[in-house]
Image (tube, rainbow, N blue to C red):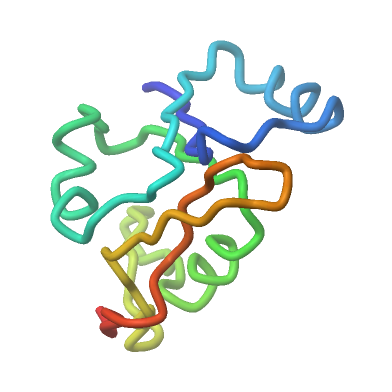
Length: 120
């Protein structure tokens, strides 16, 4: 089993985060492009990155934890197996469209477009 950290390529970790990650041994970074991922890229993410059942996936963002809590609950059954059961019908806003913007310092960044939103 492997441990992966999913992080935007423009972001960096704090020292405390790096210290915590050391508890997981070798961690493979999956850098998400600053332009983001399209829904099609997300649909194939698991296969493209060769993720396996039992792998540990860590997101460098506070939002995925809330998604984790609301998307599923862990239920133990009498034979000691663990079953994931959907607790809610969780959906997210998603937008594949990015817009390039120039900051006052001349740096070019990509942001999500105001148009093109969907609920997935």
